[in-house]
Length: 186
Ligand SMILES: [Zn+2]
Image (cartoon, rainbow, N blue to C red; front, side, top):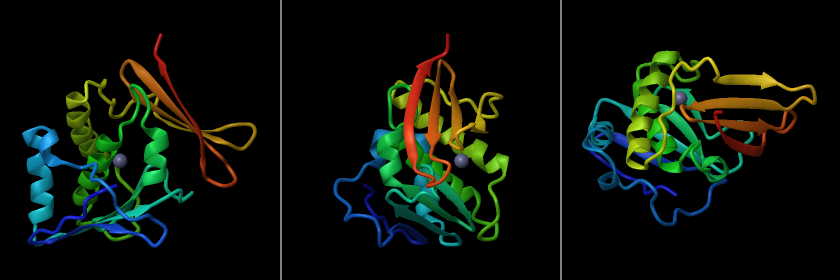
């Protein structure tokens, strides 16, 4: 879980009514590069921005993280446990991705869809964390990345991690993550 933090501005990791009590923090800024920690510091201390990261657990409407617009974002901690596998996603890099993306979207209206430039900046910081974790870089704008509707109604999301590819199978009816496969690209 995440340690809620307060700065000069309005910045918070907010528990939803469905999420459990925070235990040990997974976001410890000293663990990452100066670039990542100074970015997070900026986000926390920006008194002009209202940044709120909501947390959920097993919310079918959220796959890992969700852009909510206007500086709001949701992270699903149940999904983080499932997504964190091998050379694929890592919890810490997802948290940084979602936090940076919330901030990049601070001047958008709540409810506006995510646009590629915000997501690409978020991937850039996600990759900074991945480097410190000795994981291959996530490829921005990869032709491999996307969602495919399977014949049985499930949805497969594919994410490109340079040497590996993560395939997330999402139940088409419930929206729950059914399985996560991380395979080496031949
Ligand atoms: Zn994103």
